[in-house]
Amino acid sequence: MIRFMRKMIAKILPHISIVISGMMIVFFIIDRYNKKMRFMEDEMTKVLIFILGISAIGTAIMLIHHQRSQEWQHLRRNDASSDNPATPGEAISKLRDSISR
Image 1: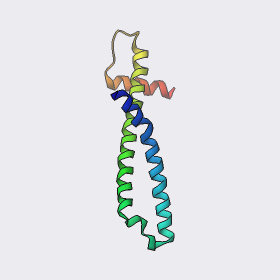
Image 2 (image 1 turned 180 degrees about the vertical axis):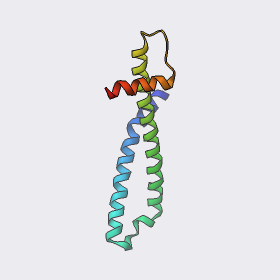
Image 3 (image 1 turned 90 degrees about the vertical axis):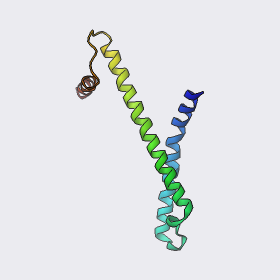
Image 4 (image 1 turned 180 degrees about the horizontal axis):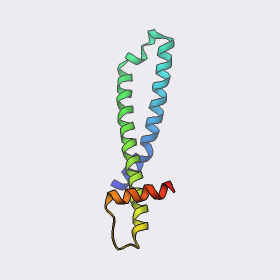
């Protein structure tokens, strides 16, 4: 159940960021053309900015986690034949060297 929820959040969170970012851009443009609407001063806009910030942070954390888990899986597959497991720093250096070639 927890795994399902994580996958669901991982799929939904980037979409939330895109939608709210689009809304904020539209509000910003409308606010520049029609100052009387005061979109950027509205309480709802402040809530949307907060949600956008939280969803952006969550999306970034999930992306970093995914990238690091992919790196470790790649390193485990390549180091499975060696007798000496590398330290995390050495493993990351090996990965960067293999990517840059």
